[in-house]
Image (cartoon, rainbow, N blue to C red; front, side, top):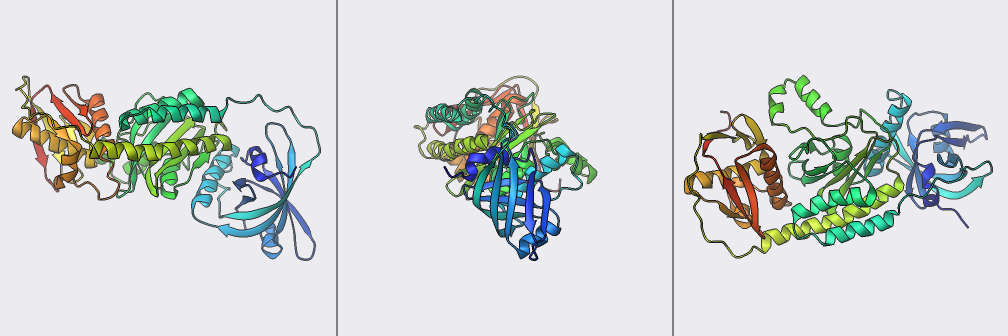
Length: 449
């Protein structure tokens, strides 16, 4: 039976370098190691172009090559006959290979040497096994297809967005034994993501942000492609690096309003998968492990399928919350509450909100909170709806992909973590209640103030 590339994907993760043979126009052969042979599809692979050397010169003059790859689990070897097609220096394939190469470089102590210049795409003309001793295959892992079935059943049972993100993280642990994960929603106009739920970390990090293009998560969002790293790498780190660069740039005073992104102290495997809703980026699903090579190609396939389930479900549940509100509740006025008043400061420049001296939230979620708090202080009002928030120009929701329901979940969870006297309760589809148990004093700091 003719072998295809997907049948030998275990050889293409970079654990064992490939051996590449090329030939000059005059017939002179050249053999060298290649850092990465990357799976593209059933008939194509991409090789890492890192140096303009004899191999590169040969390929450009004579676009045929032979590559020997080895399965790290069984030591089975395969010879690939290749035809060079093109080199990509930007885009999803390049970024995916660049991230993986950074992990390989860190693992081998070659971070200062391994730099991807391009992704050389080849057509696979033939694959043949190479004789030799082959080790027994490792015991089969639990079925990822069965796990995907269980995950789909969880998603189908969710009736609101908060339950969906929580069930997604619970399902990753139960169905796929992935214990460290987070869901981030996209703020497309702001070119950043914000964390709405996490699992397996000491601190939830709800509200933590990361810009498009930063680290594994940000690159997955910007390129809208899965990014997978099998070994630890500082180059694709996040969180601490962002805070360190801000402090070095004299922006240390702004760090009080930055929520640290959750993460393992020693993350050794990472996988970030974009969650798409049609052609729009809804968010990113991120998983990690303290084990090397925890996530292979099959895990990537499974989580891409998981993300494909989440994207439409997110859109459906957000539209349901915004468009099918229950009947309006009777207008209620909150009874006066006792105790010392807590100052609530709002900074108009970025809509950041502080409860006393403690940072709560900023951005659109901060603008939402300021509107709720203002209505409460002025009119003793406690009942609100998604629809009125969407129509309020002071909140400045983006025209496209506003993710209002996700921002309300974010605000609700930040209050639950940071405030003992104020909370948001869901009272129906598209409706919620602000509960306040101490007097609050509003202090608005205008831009430049």
